[in-house]
Image (cartoon, rainbow, N blue to C red; front, side, top):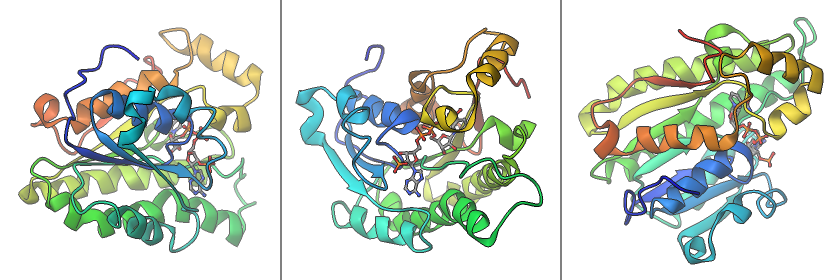
Length: 260
Ligand SMILES: NC(=O)c1ccc[n+]([C@@H]2O[C@H](COP(=O)([O-])OP(=O)(O)OC[C@H]3O[C@@H](n4cnc5c(N)ncnc54)[C@H](OP(=O)(O)O)[C@@H]3O)[C@@H](O)[C@H]2O)c1
């Protein structure tokens, strides 16, 4: 991984959720490359971390990485993960709320109590709970920053079957801006990264190759995004030295797919 300043986050502690694979893995690896100590919530278990996150981490940086697991779709998942994090550190400089998923293509009228709870508990409840529990540790930092992962679907609407998912990301987008105002007096900046169509397991699960090919053809930069295309946006928004006057913003990373 090149292009990152290896001292940018030296001595800083970064928490990333959903970091075992995909966008979160690229983000956690980027912060490690920038010298941070990273507490990475890998996902529900460690099964994907070996093939993705750990393959991105040079052995010299492995001692700065802690791996945790927690089911964040469980109603108390956010609080449980916070307990695990706070058992390891009392100061957090950066929190990246990234874990999330669509929970399947759920058509209008086909929602069940289970699918509704799963998508909203994971994409909203756990984010709000984890952030709330970690606020004292963020306040203990001199330059704290929260970066949330939202989605192009929050603004543009998603494709069929993703209405609940898009709604949760719109929630986090509005919540991000409100929190940015509320936490500014504490010196905590709050922003979001909004990925477009990024080629991770997310789309391997939910989109056909034909749909992805058609999407890529319609994107001005003529390709789907990769997890590594997203990571620098998180580093930028987290670094006070780069974005110290930026808060309450949603940074779109989508190859020009949406130009709000
Ligand atoms: N890929 C895209 O095009 C795209 C576009 C816009 C926004 N996003 C957002 O970007 C974020 C990362 O997505 P991705 O593309 O990197 O997808 P991904 O490769 O499927 O990774 C999703 C991550 O979230 C974790 N996660 C999912 N369900 C969980 C649960 N119940 N409890 C705990 N962790 C859970 C996963 O852990 P497990 O390994 O345990 O499943 C994994 O670490 C998500 O918030 C997604 O909504 C993605």
